[in-house]
Length: 66
Image (cartoon, rainbow, N blue to C red):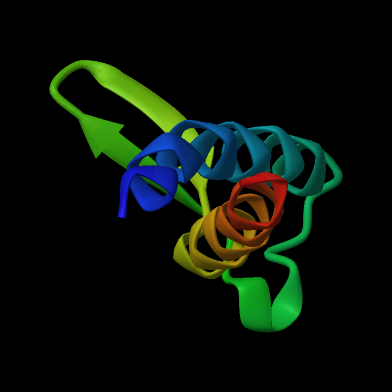
């Protein structure tokens, strides 16, 4: 269970970086649906599908290291 909590940060970074590249290219990424997310006064590109996939991948890697 601790590996899942540790995997949230790399999953978020993965989603943010890949969403930034796709968003700057002018695409939504198809099924990834990269959109602009607004939190208070900050807006950034985000994709929930990339976040779930990146978190799952990093959780699997952290789980296999134990």
